[in-house]
Image (cartoon, rainbow, N blue to C red):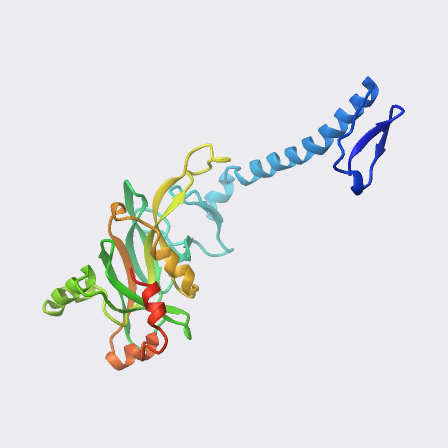
Length: 287
């Protein structure tokens, strides 16, 4: 709908003529058009500013003292704890997280799972934070943390049935294969390198993060190392996360779950019983 003037009076035009600019030939008409413009533009702008101010408002002190609402100073995320529960914190008083996609979600105190320290944050100033990983495989298993430079030399495969990603093998001459050979003769290193059949639980990658409370891009985004949680994520999304990052960002940290009841059980849990038509998928997931 547009506004035009005829004989000094405002008229509302139909949508058919909405794109025809209005014209005024006297001060009364122009003043009316100016008022209509201010109303049309000013009110939505004020609503937007008020909404942003509400979202960026400081957390009420009384709620922070009750531990009902808490803020992670590193990420700037604000969370509300369910009534009667409290978030888990590590020995430094920092929140303990569970990685869901790219988002670190706080966990309730005493959450079941293994605690793993992973370096995250600005690529130039990474700090260890604690993440929780519960077991998802049937039978005995353990959580493995491995760090490798890019390119890692790993072929990842999709387990579509269980919506998981697993280590399918290693590129000949690659870093992962070299370390696996060393670990095969040194038992002390076996839990520090990937192994065929390991299920990918999480992986670090590089993401662009705006500084806390930066408004409308007032501060440029920073390159941050984040933890991508792979549990239940779609295959293309996991592959995309694997490819986020450069060699200059440092080693990639892999959190893997390893079956410890034999090779046959490993193949059963990861869906790696046969290649089938997986050659194309294997090529796509080479990292």
